[in-house]
Amino acid sequence: SLRCAAWIINVVSAANLTMSKSDCDDYGTLKKVRVLEHGWDLVLKSIFPDPSDLERAEVLDFGVGHDQLINILMKDHGGNIPERGIQSLTKVLHAARDSLGIEYCLWLPDITCLLLSFMPESYAYSTIREMINEDSSYFLAVSRVEHLAWCKTFADLMRRCFPQTAAIMGQIGALTPLGLDPIMKR
Image 1 (tube, one colour):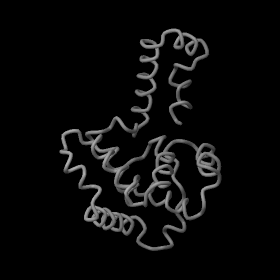
Image 2 (tube, one colour):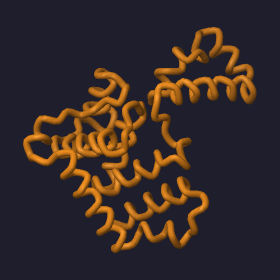
Image 3 (cartoon, one colour):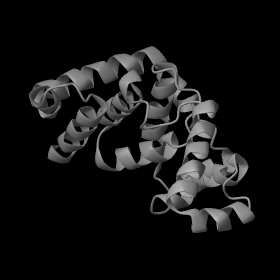
Image 4 (cartoon, helix red, strand yellow):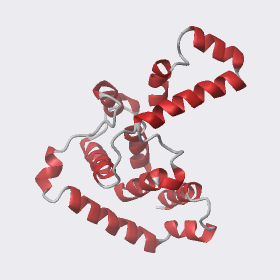
């Protein structure tokens, strides 16, 4: 759909600053849709070669924790995600882990839910792939070390740009990595 094309064109453009506008716009063409669908089919066949593999697969949490994952599935995205949506989420998250090599990414379950609300699995997967490519690692923290670095950077920026707010946050421990962890998970 047009909305999917607009999403992925913008992500590709932001993730690949040296790519020409016309090359980015190619992601919105029907030809590219067929390429993305074919690539997605190959990824799925490699991860779930037997249909029973998908039936046994569980939604991955990528470090967010079981309780937070339950909140994502049951409350955060307009109520309970239907079974078909959970199956799509499971496919995309397993593809992110098994095909893209992501082991830890606190925002990935949430972002995947949002993407799947607006686009098919193939586009959601392709968008995530573009968001984590080496040239655009500023979209998602894909390791615990990166997550902690983001927390530290946030605390430093708060101290520089908003010293009064930072002082209050510091008094209650909200600018430490432990204090920022729950904020940065969401």
